View: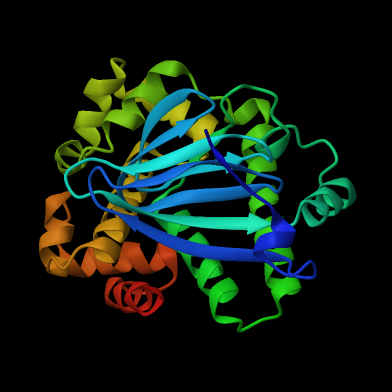
Length: 279
């Protein structure tokens, strides 16, 4: 039997949204429940087991899930150390208004009719941006309604970009699989030659496809993935910056700093300090 959470019993009717964090040790549970309002959550740290509408999945850092009103779900800490869930509950009328006004064609998120609601895998940069928005919602630095609407509009914009790719951006399955394998830091350390081997084609064909799909070169694509991996390590580990850079093949620290600042707008040290300020 599940618990039903109702907005007007938890919050004042005027409240726009509520952000919260929950840390669960391995095996520790948040009980089965449903609600009369939509929410979205993501895994900020570690690993969580998610039970929803009778289906169980394991979620890791950076995975985001939309939960619709009446979805029945529960959490359990998993992996080696459990995890941290950041959850954003929002008034249903605000979600409905923003969708109707700005994104009427959006068919995913809370409007997906599948038994299990849709999810997204966030990059390290997207995760940091989302955590920053969450802190704004939590500390009241901007008005409740303003912060809620800005958060949702940014989220809807990201969804629309993923939902409506242009023909140019359609990626062949072999390149998707190769990029997925390159998320392993050992492969990132090996660099471009490893991407060519994983792709299973000539370097020339890989270069043409990457240019067509991502409008960049394979080397730049690998470096972007390296920077994203190091950004996550900077945020969630205490390893030395030089060790993090070397782990994915940056032998020149000055070159690493140059690429990191070019991609993320700050130095690795500034990124780490900002992430810790938000933690």
